[in-house]
Image (cartoon, rainbow, N blue to C red; front, side, top):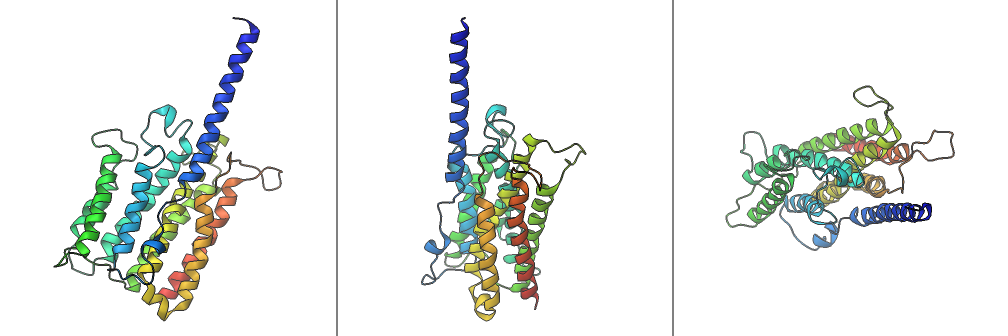
Length: 304
């Protein structure tokens, strides 16, 4: 094979690689915006049953990851999953499902249950489904279990509208809402640690090719918390009417969360604080830390 032909083939290969990465980059930007608007689906003029907004939003988040773009990525084959090419969305989805698990757990254990009351059966199944191994390929696949979790969240909503009611409504008490914000601040604390750590848990140095894994994992947390906070803002409108400062703090929390959930650099860089290149992990952490601090303030107001 002539050098000219080798050069042409190499150029084509590079062009294809660049095209694939650009397609993944812009496709991810589109995918990162959930095509579901809580305020449009549940406007102030529309009455709803407590728990309906929360469960519907949580179901929409998971359903979006399963059925838009390229679907669930963490269990894909190595060249199209969490280790190569499309690893950004795979890492982001790991963060998303971890945040979904915590948000679902508090919904089942605290927001719909008081003292010795029984658990809501649909929420028990959904919570169990979401805890399936995200990287498992089959027996069972995460896609099937997560889809079943979405189904049971929607069955929960249907039960709220049944006559007689078969689902346990959200109790709308501040004391349980504090538990949810505790879970979310813990997640954002984990995100902060990932975005600043210089060594992996095994003690090895964080390499340049690992920066994006931690970046998108942390971003997955912010994505879930952003949309669920909008749902919580709607569910607890009575609390905000009594304490307007909570509504203001929630609005101020949504702004950095939205920015954190949608940041999409072409390449995640790990520049030094005084260098000419960005440090995208630290840039993301600025929004994560701001949201976390606002949530601490919300918790303080709820406790008063």
